[in-house]
Image (cartoon, rainbow, N blue to C red; front, side, top):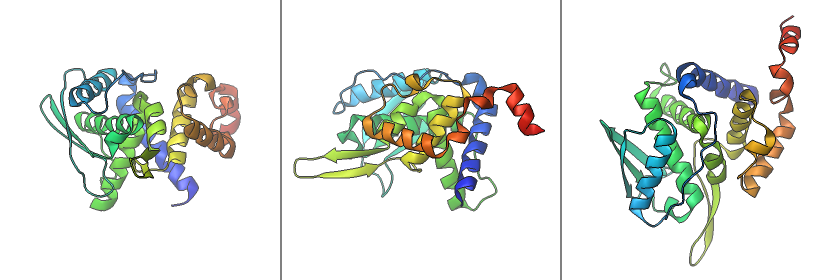
Length: 231
């Protein structure tokens, strides 16, 4: 897909979310509670806090640490109000990664409970990918954008080495583009959407702003400007 096709795909997904979840969307950014990344009960409380933020307050969470298949950081299943989330051991090494992965898994639950899917006419592999991308976008749309940007690409330090890990189905640059589109759509000031963003994510946001400035101009909220475009 070309750059423009990818952008159009993202915007189509945002429009779908606006139509289906707009009345329930939180225009605030999530503020995480303090948690112990090595304590399961603390992680369950964190997941509950995040779920409450997006209106899933009735759910009861069980978190387990379990090795996932390649290129998978977590997994979610639910039965009624009981929700079971598995997190890969590598994720637990970073608080930012934990928040990012939980945001993604909880967003799966949001889409499932609202019966929102994408790529219904595509082959199974493409349909799965499109729905994973939709899930990443949903996490940003529902207020977890800062957690996603801070945790989608991190360096994990171990006793003997360090390595880079990525979470999510799109790049940090693409996450930043979506984050900026939604922030601009909601008229959120730059000093607000840049607050509590780590250094690497800030650099990515500034780069995306520079390269795609036409998408984020405040003129798009000006009715007379839109009338000129239409003419």
